[in-house]
Amino acid sequence: MKKIFALAVAVILVTGILLTGCSGAAPKTSEKFVVGLDDAFPPMGFKDESGKIVGFDVDMAKEAAKRMGMEVEFKAIDWDSKVLELNGEKIDVIWNGLTINDKRKKEVLFSEPYLENKQIIVVTEGSTIKTKADLKDKMVGVQSASSSIDALEKDEATLKTLKEVKQYGDNTQALMDLEAGRIDAVVVDEVVGRFYIAKKPGKFAILEDHFGSEEYGVGFRLKDTEFRDKLQNALNEMKKDGASAEISKAWFGEDVVK
Image (cartoon, rainbow, N blue to C red; front, side, top):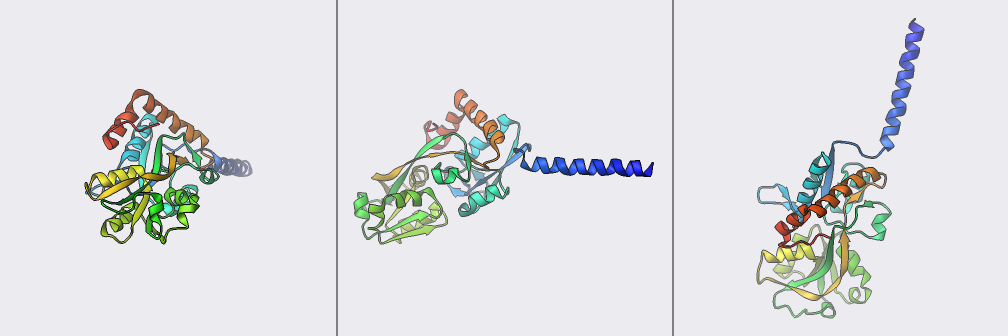
């Protein structure tokens, strides 16, 4: 009897190990997902005066989670390490004005684009810089590990004329240095630049020239196709019934959702 019992226990243990191994490779099925974001990227995701994380992408994630019957948690991360945080399973999605590009598609599974953005050039009001050509021998600020750097590097003709490209931990620091006169211009996401400028009327100007347009998407682990599809369905519903438009109007004054 003891031998039979021991054999039964062994079978149960082996079965449990095999099931555990299988579950590790399965798509995400938890009732909560963690959003990784740069908490200094207004209006997409940032800390308000009370220290609470708020923003357009935050509200979009909350609404999507509600429709999916899931809870959502927001975690501030080092933007330089966003893909490592995602694939190391410290977060479940990157949702914070993440630009879709071919390089990232090799490491990240994307949702469909939900917003279009430009890489604009911001200068101080009254600056002699009026075009990209005027950036010659000037210091330009960008956020490190951002699509602003990628956009700038693609324009080799302009890049090679610059005195220096100074990288910052976040766009707010770059724009503060611009206001203080420590740099001459900032290349930044349009949604961020316009939000910041609106808070300081008469301080900044946006050039007509820019460094190209791009699309934002939600980033998932490559294996999490089932989870991506579930969240995409929620986003589609939000677009169809006008919920995403209402969130957009609250942050941008108009519906900018694709």
